[in-house]
Amino acid sequence: MTIAPRTIRQLTDTVINQIAAGEVIERPASVVKELVENALDAGATRIEVATAGGGLSLIRVTDNGGGMPPEELPLAVSRHCTSKLTDDIHDIRSLGFRGEALPSIGSVARLSLRSRPEGADSAAEISVEGGRVSAVKPVAANRGTTVEVRDLFFATPARLKFMKSERAETAAITEVVKRMALAFPHVRFTLTGSDRNTLELPAVPADGEGLLRRIAQVMGRDFAENTLPIEAAREGVSLSGHASIPSFSRGNAMLQYFYVNGRPVRDKLLTGAIRGAYMDALPRDRHAVAALFITLDPALVDVNVHPAKADVRFRDPGLVRGLIVGAIRHALEISGMRASTSGADAMLAAFQRPEQRAAGHAAPQRYTPPPRPANGWSAATSPTRPLEMSTASGFSEPGQAAFDVGAALSADARAGEVEAAPELMRTPLGAARAQVHENYIVAQTEDSLVIVDQHAAHERLVYEALKEALHARPLPAQMLLLPEIVDMPEEDADRLSAHAAFLARFGLGLERFGPGAIAVRETPSMLGKVDVPQLVRDLADEIAENDTVDTLKERIDHIAATMACHGSVRSGRRLRAEEMNVLLRQMEATPGSGTCNHGRPTYIELKLTDIERLFGRR
Image 1 (cartoon, rainbow, N blue to C red):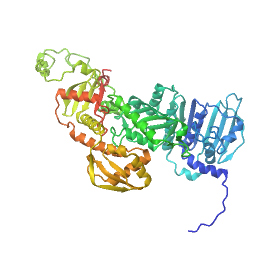
Image 2 (image 1 turned 30 degrees about the vertical axis):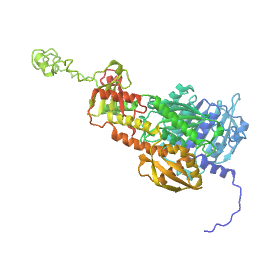
Image 3 (image 1 turned 90 degrees about the vertical axis):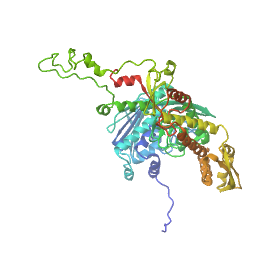
Image 4 (image 1 turned 120 degrees about the horizontal axis):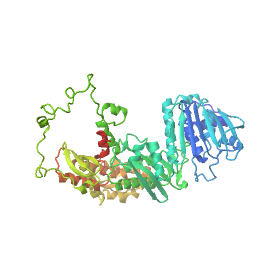
């Protein structure tokens, strides 16, 4: 196909803005994100968002921020005009800085911008419709700024074909507001509209307790009850936030929130760090829940990777990843015994009647008296006959004989029972009381009932002991009869050579073999027969992406997990009282024993108050 030569010409401002809108404004949720960021940069403490038609018909964002004087309104809707950026592109301390959002929105929608700065007698308004800018006119308004967007993408109707349903777009807007609200707990957010239920997130103190309250508002009370505080710092990078205990997980990563200098981001490095931190505690199809905040010098992170500002690049990605993995693993180690409250809730739900489960609560079953006889009450005709004590059908001595369970057990007869010592009752997992179906240990604490899966629990104990033994010293290696020469790009060979000493600790002996090759002389004995070229190339790819060599460690840990599974206490084995209590004490002393190697919970705790509620005592 021959392309005829064409004369180069300058695109019009409207076309330029529409091209930018294709990058910045992907859907209505993108508009909400940009406008809320502007409000936060203006110092707002109250932000109200109203939508209709999934944001395609109407988006209105009102704030009480600093506002803008009338002479700045034309600049606000002009391309690449901003008050948030100096001449140093590396010193970005605000959420917005590109100056593209408002002109991009105005090029594909009907936009009106109304603003009143503090101390001004009146407000001013400017409108943009499909790229055409109106004159500034005075209006009445409160202090702050109101941006109203109607008929989104009316100027580019082809884009409307790619929008999802109204419900999906509404849910996406809700998710954007929640993500922003987590980063700014001191700001009150209100989300209303004809296409949604009202969402109100009151302002809370910007401290640890306030953040946990905002997390409960956004991510649910369950997460707040099953969370671990995360706090760490290294080489100028600080990390804070909350992450879930291993037994509290989800089927996808939607509830993983990451913030860099207060900016919500999506980054494969951070998602991979979460996966690495929970590698031994969660199966591959389960995901932890987390809200993590990274703070560092703006010069050490590039937020100008994509026009939507959702992707970031760190100058030292290995440092950030190592900080996240180390901080979460440390929190898991020091957290002690924690059982997910969702496990107890599921157990309570199993005891409920179907109508109670449908109602979503555990209402106790109450006593319903029999209907009153038409002829009045009499002892002779009463179905309960409480006064009839003379016949065998009542509660006379002969009648009570049917309920006799025998004489009380003597002290000798009870010698085989599990006695709960007071000091054991005060431990996290309590004292073993029984074994059910030769697999579940029932234990009692001072205020709860604990049910332990003996196989899953012992599997975790054996696995942790194996890992400690394996990583405490260099792993045995098997010498290859002939070294395996693996050809690869020179930069990959450089990366592997730099990590050669660390890899040798895991039994992988390699050295440089010319400019573009690696010679492998030893492989870990535990792995048996190994596809050496594939292993080495996988390690090189991982070092290039994350500056880590976790692939080899994961394979060795997988072997240890398999060994632990086959070497642990099997289901169906009857345990003595002493063995059950020893298992409980070892669980309390082992980090991560709340889940097995496959991510399943090892025990469930049911509080006495929950049990009493089942029987209508509360």
